[in-house]
Amino acid sequence: MPTILIVEDDDNLRKNLIEIFDNENFQAIEAKNGEEALQKTKAEKPDVILSDIMMPVMDGYQLLKELQADESLSKIPFIFLTAKAEMENIRAGMAIGADDYVTKPFKIDDLLKTVNARLRKRERITNEVEELKESLVRKIPHELRTPLVGIIGFAEYLEEQGDTLPAQEIKRIGTSIKLSAKRLHRRIEKFLLLAEILAGKITNFMKKYPLDFEYQFDDKVLLFKLRPLAKDFGRAKLLEVKARSVRAKIYEKYFDLIINELLENAIKFSPSDSKIYIIGDYTDQNNYQITFKNYNEKFTEEQFNSINLLKQFDPQNYLNEGVGIGLAIIKKIMEDVNGSFTIKKDAENFVNVTITFPVA
Image 1 (cartoon, helix red, strand yellow):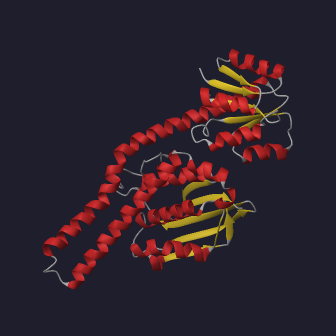
Image 2: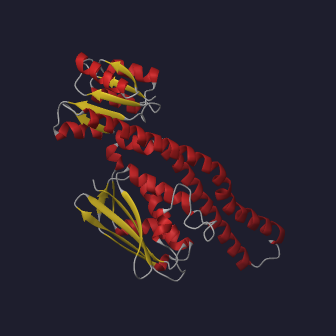
Image 3: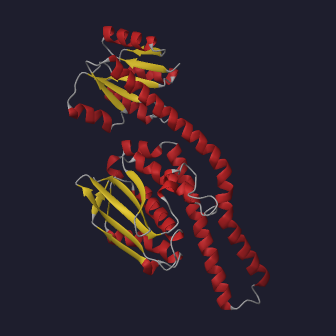
């Protein structure tokens, strides 16, 4: 039986809402204002909150801000119930973290659909997180062990044979150790970022610091950020970048991880002598997209459609490539910034991986 907290200062409406949800097998608890609701939320941990906006003592906006500031309460679905349908009020509520809204007067069916939709979404996210945690327990040792084995193996080889090896061979081994160490570092960064995603820190950061969630770049910035990785794989001269300048609504830290992850996948799953194209442009005045384009005869759209958290394109062919977790992170980040992530293959066997996100 899900628990709903109804926050409403109108006694008659509050009683009617309690009766509606009681009849729908909810456990309904009530509060007359935001301050009372905050205390009951801390004590009861409801599954969903339905709150009026204009109330005495503490209004709905302040209540939501208080809940967002508490990490243990910030993930509870929050729905505004308001008599004002003006867009500025709705936007204000959504901007500070409301999940949805219902305007008065409302139809009972519409109200129930909204509440149940938010509960289903929360349940789906909870199940995904639990599945991901279980997968991580199995996946992390392998993801970290692969590059670490290379580092240890080369170091032991140098320790045993270093006195007899020519300088050129020692240099080659040093380069291999460096590349394995960088690979290990990138994977550790992925897992740390994944931990942030699971904790809901991206969404919370966007709500608390909206101005910090804006980043300006162009083709020169992209090339500067991507060249080191391309150089590690010997593909720096095969990188072609063309992008219009934009101020995007995305945190630079997450943006850097996304573009490097997409480039690494494009490098891994394309011939070593083929070019990789990176194209950035506006789709309209509100959105911008970046496409990574690489040649790949084997990839199919069905493989992408089957991607889930920590699942790879083709476990038999790409078992040790570590692509699953990277794409899972990208998908989640793009969802959190109200963007999108698509993969398509054109008639010339070029895979086009596109991220689309809002502009500031």
